[in-house]
Length: 105
Image (cartoon, rainbow, N blue to C red; front, side):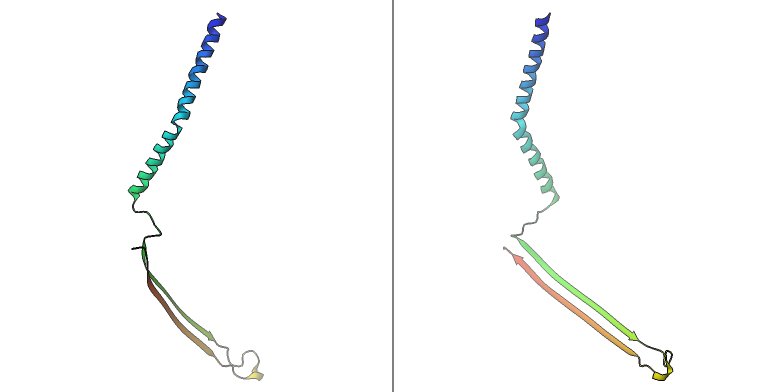
């Protein structure tokens, strides 16, 4: 009876070693299959960015308007100083840059 039990454990051990050997041998094939699936999925998405072949149009515009008004009521703080003057500052700025970048053909 003891010989049969030892023989069964030995058979299970040999089967496990064979299965592990097959898995280790197939590791590269599984890895290549996964990489191929990723590549085909990314190719279906569309064209990939390649910095050697880039054409781009650049348009950059900045516009700012600023108005500052300073007024003080005449003689409200101290009547000895008389009336205060008011000041209004206005500035308008427009900056535009445009260009084309072409790399490669």
